[in-house]
Image 1 (cartoon, rainbow, N blue to C red):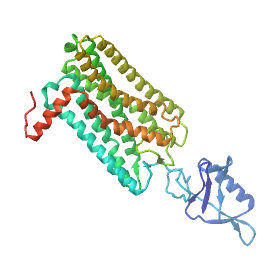
Image 2 (cartoon, one colour):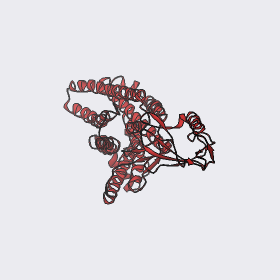
Image 3 (cartoon, rainbow, N blue to C red):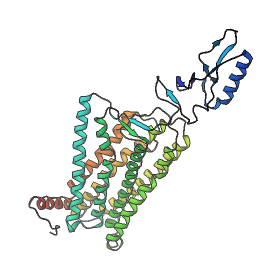
Image 4 (cartoon, rainbow, N blue to C red):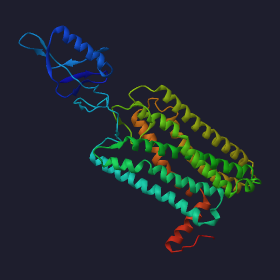
Length: 406
């Protein structure tokens, strides 16, 4: 027997049940039996125009004029028992989603190959640039100071930050299915946004370090010791990976029953919440409030710190001292402006209705391009870092193995 169900999302879903036996019954008995079926299976029926609809196919009459009716003797087909579902018109809205489709950047195959090559080069340059900063800080003893230790941690973070998205995006360029598993999607969601949160904490720690160095120079050596810097860095890592557990958990508990297509190149909270079967205003409000509090609190802390720094620098009588302070703080402010300017557009209100194309471009900018720019900004605007990189390259070329002391 075949039963046709109808739902507000899609009509025509076929449910194929095992072939039952037919019995000859009177019209009254058939009506009573149908009523019992509706009552028994009412919780798993489809609806049309607000009324339950079950179409019993294969009905007829026998030689005596009695009605033939198929009598199923099995539990509700949506109860998780053995069933066979056919949905020729689209996604099956009854089964939970087990994987998502990341559309990425739909275009021709030639354009996909070009994008794959382009972002592969960007990824390699990003890893190389940030690795050079880490090696320069490690090798040059003059850079074993709190500011450069935090910078090395920041570069290490940027390497993993870009790694959480770009490899999967590159794989999707060459993939025909472009699928990602449910657990894989939320793991990417967690690590990507946890590292983004950690980045806001490191930018705050770096701003605090510059505030102490310029506004409180006499207290700086006793307050910002190497041990204190290491504790600050560890706190940034732990807090960054702890903060986003709640939003990820709340969104993962939403019912996803189809469709499963995400018009993005990563698992982003906005498109994910739009795929939920039921509206989730409470989750949206919690996530928007959390994002707003995190972004604005760290941004206000950073801007306040640099405002005090700039005010103190303007009082420095030496032009050389002002130039050195501005060159150091200018690089930090450039990174802060690039990062915060893009994430504020996206995550203060994740379901505000930004067009998918704008979401992709903005996300691409702060997740891929900003980690590429950071090594350039820090190396080109900082004389000590440029000198350390020159020493590093000379040591690599001439085969020097000992850490650089001069």
